Length: 216
Image (cartoon, rainbow, N blue to C red; front, top):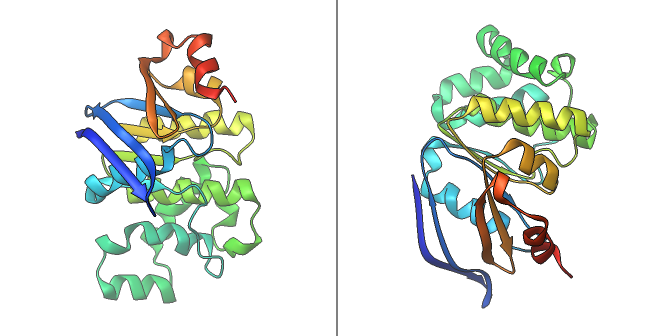
């Protein structure tokens, strides 16, 4: 589904990804791990650019519009799939079918009562769940997520991860919590300094791999 061969990406002359070779098959569930600045976000962005029409994306910083309600932020996940008339109609008066669909998604995330609240009033964990709900609402065959559960408490984070894994055929997430990555994903890609340090099945990742990955 994705094939990157010797991909190097630089910003302002500074390399962010270097000689990336990565193949991802349809149906794989993959966690990207590594220290801050290792290139995980840039890699996810490149993957999204390769399959924008079939992918849903959870942004690291949520990418929500504070002045809009939770409903409208989630509805925006399908703006490009709806006519201008339908979008304006739902902006002025949310339609019953869309309200029901979005309410059911929020219910799975424990936020059904927040559907018409302004996003600006939400906590960090609630905002992150809205971003997750938007990706679920958009659908698609691929989910790309940049730290999608970093602001959610550990118990809820596991529930949200399971929901995401079961809702998309192919899932590629960057995660900062190593044990969640190892417990929830069959393939782990470790990045450090813009390079892939290892690409292994989850059950083959050893402490020695993690020590090299996160060494200061």
